[in-house]
Length: 367
Ligand code: FES
Picture 1 (cartoon, rainbow, N blue to C red):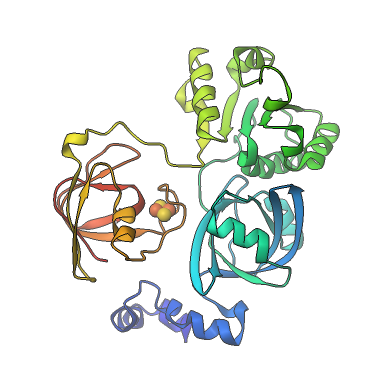
Picture 2: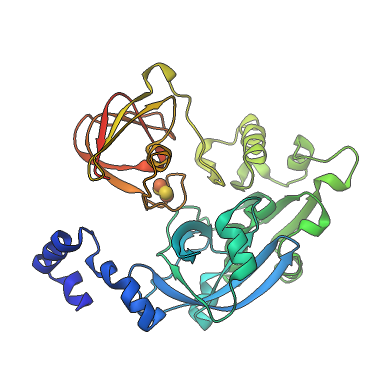
């Protein structure tokens, strides 16, 4: 029945009317999940095959997604859906394994750091066990390996190494011959994620140079500097990839920019959403949540997702930084400012992302 609902426009429309969902098949998820978790439609079910420790606060989860999952490119992200205390939670993580591994044995890995106060990451560390089933969304994101091959420089910090691991494994297995250097910054040597894998790559892949810097193991601490970049041969001709905490990314961007490396050769993937400089004079306004028949007012650069949650609504979301589109919602009237770009929407009906949309005057959304 679900495939019929998905394929027939008429039945899809009927399902939309009956169940008020873009994906009517998802209506049956809770029922199917009770019968057999591998039947769930909203996400692809993925069984946890193994879990192993990377560091004191980071684990790698090996997952086997069901056959309908479409695969991924190295460096992409996925949304996952898991039930924590009976409530479905959605989060976005980078895949840390190579697509070559998925094609060979049907498994992928997520390498996840326990975040202080993080509901989902802590639950996964404390309760998720081999044999459990979680939901896996389709992969997305444009943090991808240079094509065709060219010299590359990776600058990663902490758990920002995860999409980089996926790319390095893929490049090594694809006979990537252009020079590739990784500058990996961690707090202490004990915080190096996938240390064994990185050192194995460095010893078997001649084009690869690995440099690990434990910032707190030296006095004074050694943060990214001109000196580190001076030591990268032919840096001006390298395509640069950045992934890590905002401070490291800002510093790396600044140092690379000062060397004349243009924006088009620097690729970043973020832990948290960057924010444009917004004109605070035009931010905030009355918000009408149509389906809930709720009116609230907002101030400053609060985004609609936060405003809705503060009003005790529970809109769906994943990354909370404008990349996964899980929070997409229909705006029926009013103007919103995109917090990432600073651009204003039109005044009429359109789909917006709640997590990056700041009201600018009165706004009405279908929520
Ligand atoms: S939650 Fe991912 S785009 Fe909004």
